[in-house]
Length: 118
Image: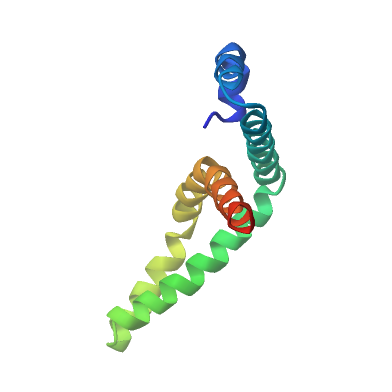
């Protein structure tokens, strides 16, 4: 699947690929591309929201993991302190991953849900 950035770079490639498909497949491919572009735009617009979600998930996950792996109190507290300081680095890496992979994952998930109905 081509992302919007790839489509801008190679519009002829997409058009040649679409001409080989039937009309209903062309419409489906066009809608899939539109959904992907909309989700990419949503992530770019709502960057702060996604970063807050990542922070919340990191806080919950790190505390649960530390409590599970380190039951001795002094180690537990030290690891929680380390987890707080490592949050900005994790946020950067996680948001990069979310920005790169989430639009395609959400698009595929939504299309699977729609295909089950049909």
